[in-house]
Amino acid sequence: MSAAPASTSPVPMKVVISHMIPTFLMGLFMTFAYLAGFHRPAPHEVPIAVVGPQAVTGPVMEKLQAGLGDMVSLRALPDSAAAREALRHLEIAGAFIPGREEGKVLLAPAASDTTAMVVQRMFEAVSHKTGLPISYRNVVPLSSNDPVGQNAFFFLVVISVTSYALSIAIAAAGATRSWRERLLLALAAALAITLIEGGVAAGLFGMFAGHVPAVLGITFLYSLAVLLVGVGLHPLLGRYSTMIYATVFVGLNFTSSGGVFEPFMQPRFFDALNQFWIGGGYIEALRRIVYFPQVSLSGPLMVVLGWLLFGALCVALGMWYEQRHKPRPLSESRMELEEDVAV
Image 1 (cartoon, one colour):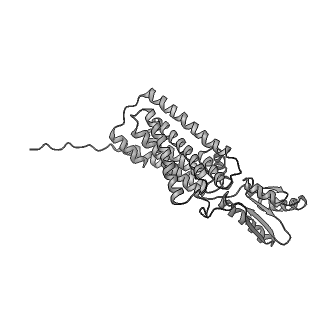
Image 2 (spheres, rainbow, N blue to C red):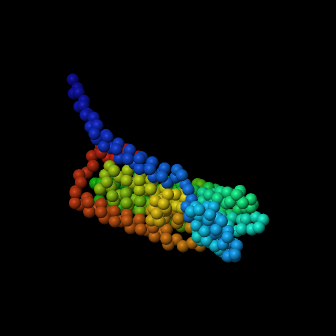
Image 3 (cartoon, rainbow, N blue to C red):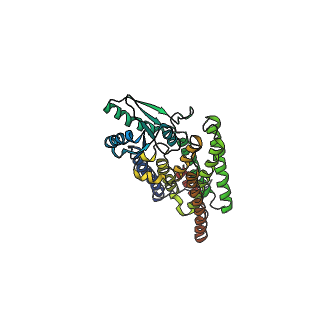
């Protein structure tokens, strides 16, 4: 007689539930972040210029401020050339040129198509109230291959999810490997993400035409920063890695990036976050590379480089933690559970 197969005891229910909780919390955090950041965009202090001599702009600004309130932040510019230059340097979101028979509004959809639409709607309301016809001119239009101005944001989504998911795979499956090997894998992953996903975006879909090398350069820095944070902190976070990384690099990152709505169209929390969060730096860098080459890259580049430095510090912290705690190698079952949660 053949021996009866040994019975396999099921995983304890508390273990199953303990792996479900972080995923549920991840969904909860992302629900709060997405709904708070996107569900009700409302302008606050949108920078608008009123163009013309002071004798004209003064009374017009008073009327606009009274009608639009804190939705706008008004400034005066002497002529349309100055207004166009301010739009090309991302100093204003729109410029109003009053006239006796018709007013004109200058826009820069390349900075944010949603903001341009909001500015247009504000002045449509002004036109309806005053009876003054208003025409609209696009000073910095979107390219034909980026009709809604979302290419940079969509690409941000792709590289963010791939980068943080790969960081978990490297850290979990490579937990028994040396830190040198893990870091080499992270470097190779960042390079692969940049070249392969960037190649698909540029080669197959024609995105970022004429600016591919610069876009790929900033993409590599972004992806490497995310990977270093993920690989570095994984020894401390363990099964909570997916929850934390999804919150940091998806929930808070996408909502504060300025890719869908500019910060002054969102609650002030996301406005503040945009100033130093990695997605905000990345989106602004791509925006300047593709549409506003005359504007300095130093600000957004410093944000991305700051996160790269933070990633290096996370690696140092992870190395220190492992040395102190000397964790045992992961069992095959636990690795499979972590990979399932990561997916």
